[in-house]
Amino acid sequence: MWQVWLILAGIFLVIEIINFGFLIFWFSIGALVAMVVSLFTENLIIQTTIFLVVSTLLLFLTKPFVDKMLPKEKIVKTNAYSIEGKIGKVIYDIEPVEGKGQIKVNGEVWSAKSSNDTYISKDTEVLIEKIDGVKVIVKPLV
Image (cartoon, rainbow, N blue to C red; front, side, top):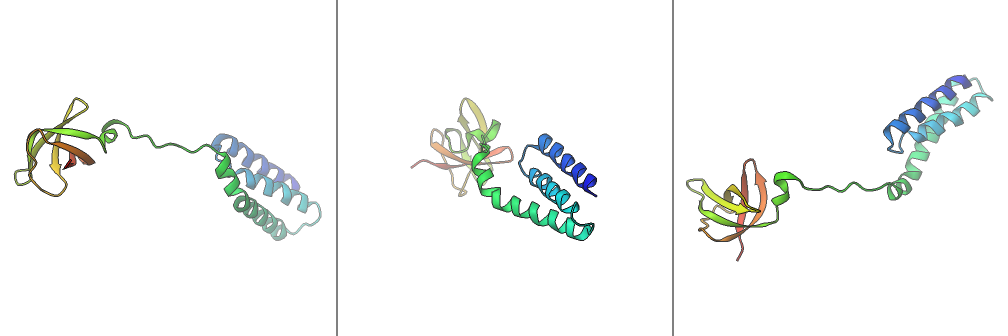
């Protein structure tokens, strides 16, 4: 049975190399420990239990350390969502009843509506709170 555990350890290691999440690696170590145990006992239940216990323990005990070591992914707002939180200028009155209104931000013109359904007049500076479909939700800077 030791050959099967060795093959499984190799498979887990190859998956880890492809994945690079430092998660599957511990299953490879667990399979190697189960391989050593298989040299002393033929009982497959004991071998599998050892594999699962060692893999799980290594996974949970090393997770905080691995999280500190691996680089964090930065979420960068791109395209339309990059204007959230920026200041724009109303170029066409924002009227909640008629659903009309436009602002200009970063040289781009956007359809707009106010966040609290209030009228915002032309040339008012507004803060872009979020994007809702093709319209920006704004509130006046006061």
